[in-house]
Length: 238
Length: 201
Image (tube, rainbow over all chains, first blue to last red; front, side):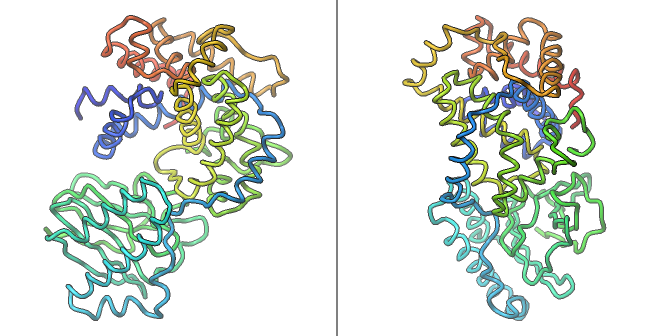
């Protein structure tokens, strides 16, 4: 870890970093599990500082908030079920030649992104741009694998060190559980986030050379390390 | 994580008759559009969020506006809360603190705030004597006791940033101390506070 950047964890947890430095530190966190762990603990600590100055707001505030949420659209990590409309979309993915399947996957992902960018956050657009960049990368290659009746498709760009994961026909995770995506390296297993409840692209990275992609069922909210055998492990060949 | 801490966990505060669902579960349900869950989430967290915003912004009217924005933001973003990246209370606190700081860093609000700040200390007491639950008072005392265990520079750096809403270059300026020192004191101060409070990570 870069010691200099690492020492920003306190200022970050106190929300005392200027915007640009805060974003830079977040990028650093994605690459530094030790820093992420420490920062998480320091953020829990500042939450305790907040709890120590609890002060009940005027009671009229609740009615206002509850009324207003009716007019606020919730952000969604969940993708409209574009893939679910065709009865067996995965059949097309599997049947086609790799290039054709890649185009189908790209179209599904991009179609979904177009729907989602409508009036939504920068953050989501940035994420969408990153996904599009992986799909459009000249070195993007695709691996599909079956998990029971479902299909898991990984589109991997070594140049972007990123992989986009799309599933079709996955059963809903068991009650109080989530599917979690992992990047499995020779030395460490890193969480790449939770799968949305309905089919949607998941962007995982940074991918290191030799990483494999795994999916496990984890208790709701995910785990730090896998606690069950992977449903599937996909080699990401460069 | 949240389930292992019990008494010391702000997520577990405010239990009514029978065990209330932890804040994380209410947030998750809210993320699925469950307004009843959000209503219960409001009951559990609005005091912490308002208290923090009020501490930073000082002005009650503005603080109400800010905390209302914060709660709507929490409703909007709830589907994106990822528990692998931190506790629910920490996630909501961060949203509230960012909004509060955005508000005080705008020039207009700054002028009003200076006037209000003149009537209060920057980082000291200011504990209102509203009826507070025993657990709240215990939490206040625990945090205050642990803050008292910091060195003066750590204490000032941490409280000016968090309760005062100042950026670390501003804190460095206020304390006439080099940037690098402030950065380090913020980190080692928070680490000492974390260990004193027994925060599980």
